[in-house]
Length: 239
Image 1 (cartoon, helix red, strand yellow):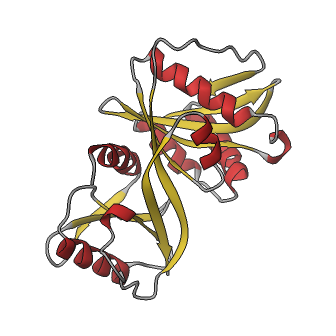
Image 2 (cartoon, helix red, strand yellow):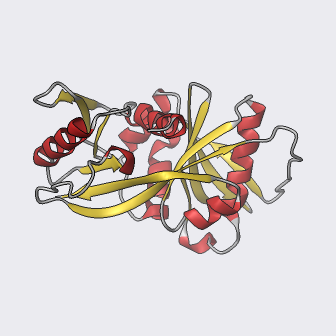
């Protein structure tokens, strides 16, 4: 695993641990984690593992999976050859992506687009809005946990209407970008792109110049066009 891959996964690892989680160990003492609420993931700690450890880790996690969890495994941590899914099926894949910001690059103004910070009293509204963007339910309690853990959540506001959501989480001077989405009625206007550029300006204003994200297949063309580089895949398995 490269340094950049580790930084990307470590930011995601720390973000997920803002929710109530279980820390467990395999029979050989390797740690792994489970979230019982959104995003209901099971995953292992990012790091460099031997091929034997990868085989053991994936086999044991796959047997301990429940129907309510998604097992997220970076491609770099999968054993070579046939991984032995043990009744798991690939649900979807994402690309780890990163970008180093240029502090000298000219900024852009977006007079019709704003990022409005979300507070605890707006947790339910943010949960509903991001659910509309991505097509799944998010509990307000999960949003509250993220806010208490110092994640920054935003509404994308366009012409006085709430058009979508965004979230950032910074750890060790690495800013992760998550939940950037636009609801149906506002799509096709380039709002996600403008929101990403605003998030980059916020990062620079906080003296952060490295951004991390995990992109869906739909989002990858946008992020590539903005200069993000792919670091490898994360595969997500379900029972």
